[in-house]
Image (cartoon, rainbow, N blue to C red; front, side, top):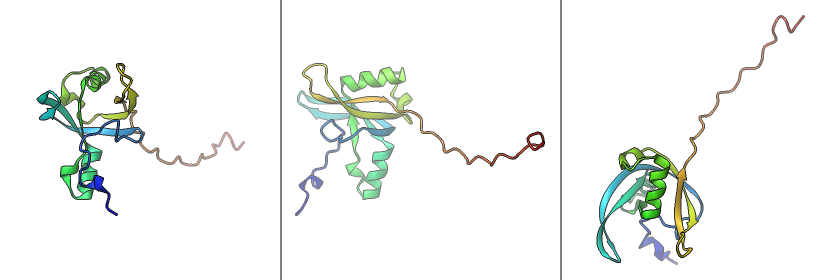
Length: 135
């Protein structure tokens, strides 16, 4: 059988297609004209390093998963980064998870600052006995 979802992949990250919390790093921010229920509107769209690499590995960059910011997520980003300047968000990592909207209780995406990735620690040299310790 053929997986029909491969013919119409979800290009936008949403609460409906996020199965577990995801750590994503913003690599690009664009303003794009998108069709909405109110007609065409300019929206802030985030692109992620991890999604870009996955799309490149799969050989189809047109399927790169991205995120269209709504009001709630925009508030999360402004709070986390203390900045409304989207260039300040590039290179920052965030944890995306599923939350509940305040109005209506619908599932929605939430963002929080990702903790820094710890650098691997070099192996410690074996402790050498000191002359004092050997007396």
